[in-house]
Length: 342
Image (tube, rainbow, N blue to C red):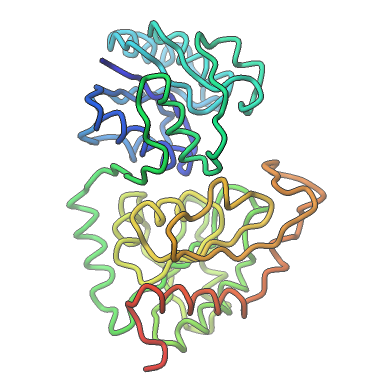
């Protein structure tokens, strides 16, 4: 049997859908995936996928590319298409794929409720699926697959990324690397750069080596963190998502807001401190027993609007001292560093 996963973006959404791919593979399904360009790097060369179908993003939509992607999807002759995203565009790709079964959540559990019209099978979200990973896994139940609770993230392996990251961290001495990721998609979810700089001072004083990671267009933000750290932190070299995966695997600690890099760090089992405000960590936050969330809860929470008067500025209420205390507890729980020895 063949299943087509439709999860177009973003990085975190794709990461949180990977356990569904793992579950399909465990039950003998052949799988393909429809994805937009920005997230494709997490799926290319994945041995669990027989086909990765790149579709144009809405901001760069082109009919020629879209028709080519549609022909590719139909050539796969999928038995079922699974709409994990709950949008008009994801439902449209699932419906147009040619799959006999088009499965997704019913109106109340979709980001764009009316898009349920394009589905052939509308599923009610089961109780007890708080985290989005389990919501995704529960969508496999119409296929006879019970996998809620699975935390298996089949990520691609890159020998080149391993070599690059090994060279980058080779100079780090005792204590290891603390990855600080100040950037992300929504400004309303981010912690101020100067607070990251102050945090870096505290981590360096405790023997860790803060490394500031950044994505495209975030160089100035990373530099602001470094400047605020009084020499405690250094800016990372440019990293692809595959590089970040390897860096997180080697980190003693990863600190970041509700963004793709934080979710990648959770996926590879790095010790994590997540900084949350408007979004709900029970839905899409860290899931390992030892991981720690520091949060300020605005009156609109949970809120997934990029701009909102109720949660504007809420992340600035998180203080450096409490994040540093959370970091101390998380690293101590991981058993990889003795803070008392510093």
